[in-house]
Length: 239
Length: 185
Image 1 (cartoon, chains in turn orange, brown):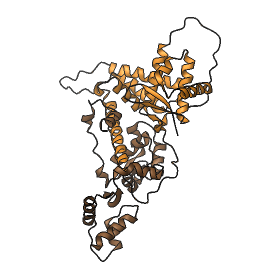
Image 2 (tube, chains in turn green, yellow; image 1 turned 180 degrees about the horizontal axis):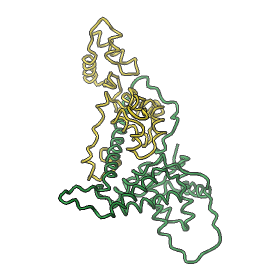
Image 3 (cartoon, chains in turn brown, yellow; image 1 turned 90 degrees about the horizontal axis):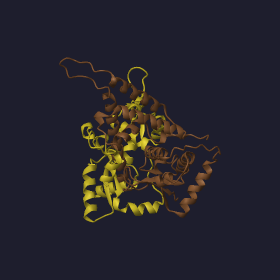
Image 4 (cartoon, chains in turn brown, blue; image 1 turned 120 degrees about the vertical axis):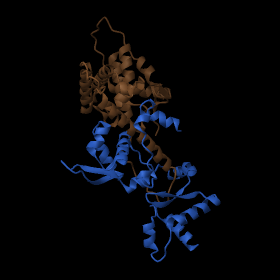
């Protein structure tokens, strides 16, 4: 497969960490570094399988996590009376909190903007055409990590095959896109998880997942999630 | 009374907020307090249940339609006047708005990702601009928000931005931004 998905339009390593923290309801001041590190690495691996261009920032974060993990394994120095021992996670916690602060601020400011847009002034210039369309319009409330999470789950559920068949499967991206399109003609929407679970082989799952990402890119479908960690629904995008 | 109608006419005819400074240039001989007259007009609008009101934006005053007509006005235009900012762009814009003047490197260190294209698109939309250079090594460019930003977001000045949530409030609420969004709707 010769195309790559740019992660730039999605999220960065701090988003992934906040995603884990929120999903598992972790205490941000007491992050289980060891678990988080291995899961972080696993997600990077998943992104690689899917040909998502893993930004250097993810690698940097992975190495930071491993460094913290290593530091935490070292025996703590007994500083006689002083209770002041530095937690190797402090710096990371600070960054996460600061980032979260601005993430919240940006949704608040978006709301301020939305609200202001309901009031109109005379002689407003209507932008002729938005030079760059906002891709996040097509992905409503779903982060890439939500999709990856289900992808991972589905891969894990596949039964280990004990016999090996040597006939090679031929599944093309185009075929899967057609398949999804046909499905959307008969149904108004598709449940992402059910769809994934209905596929029998790893290759098929991977190609279908890529087909979905490609269709989001081509604005042929939208992806929605009504509640956080709820079901993810695919619908055809109507112009 | 002439003043009031004159101000209304001026406000009506310009798409940009009208400032006291601008007004003084237009009628140099008279000493007119713009805010005072705007308040009067607003009272009148309210009294007669008009569709318009005047709001203080970006250091001036602008005549606007009431939000309840948004739905129909939008249909009139047949196209949204809104610009769409991606989430990354919105995040970078918020960081710049609260921390200005700020260098791109600092924005990147908060977001944890490269912000080249995001900063570029915010510049293209004239929401941010270069405000100067950093002291010291490298003399990095410093960015800040523009007058256009205030007008687009309906803010009078930067200090009118909603307060940042305290870090201590963030620690155990366990909320994601989307949840906050849902709750306030």
